[in-house]
Length: 413
Image (cartoon, rainbow, N blue to C red):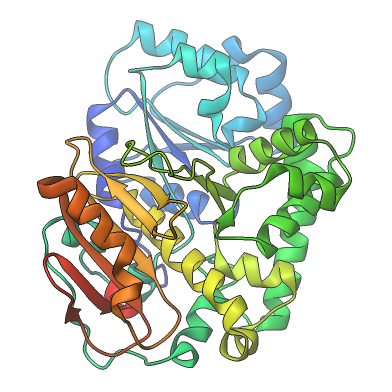
């Protein structure tokens, strides 16, 4: 790791995968540090040869003859931005079927190539994928434990002198985690994300999705930013944009494939017939969220109705990033029923155990804030490991059997 680089928590997972799998893919949005990470690994346990498909000549050679291109590669090779020539993956499959030694290819992609049917069906068992998201707060602060794993171990954080109130967190929430944006001023961050969306529309949407009206995808992203942490209502989005539901569905899939928007499905184990089935929708980064709606840290402090969704987005997407390097990664959901009980994030492991997380931008917690968590605990019994309300207060507090409140700073401190 270079002296000025922030250590990425997935690095040990990536090195382990390279030692055991024939090929490894690093998937993440553009400009989250994939290229920096893989190039930093060159000469260690990764591959000594580096090729990027952002280079026009390399891309054209790969596109014209994918099989011949791969056949000409000797030794371990890194191929950056593989989604620009997806047919290369099918040529890589042929090579991996013939040669089974580990660490032959390290590929990166700024789109979820697993959503491409030809790729999803062709490569199971041959390529191990890891996710790289914008920086977690743990990475920005320095080495630390994984909050998700701690929750499942019932090890509640006890942060020392955490910030209190929205003002204490506003700069962190507004900055987000994009390496090229989080240290900028609000004005400079807005310019960064305006350029980011313009580039994404002109290159990725046009090239990957081949849409005639690629600008409409950028418009949807801005609208999702304004409604982040809300229930997904495709009809309402369509009315706001002047398009039909099918178009909204298509454009949402594109934004999800570009790893910019995340849907959190509803968790509904039939506890009652009154459960809400609609997913929630989030922009993946609060720095992007605020920039796209023209807000900054001052609005987080002054406008409680805006701060609530922003803080929920911040926490929910931080949990999503932590899952990428969790010891036993859970799946993420939300829970809501028509009786007003809700849990912002439900994390369920493969063995059925789960924890719940509720988010408050306020500095006080009451029993009403734990109503949804208590409902899950009382209904699920031993499957329910614990629930926590993350808030902007200063102390970790017990609220009865397996229920707690803890400062948001516990995510990284």
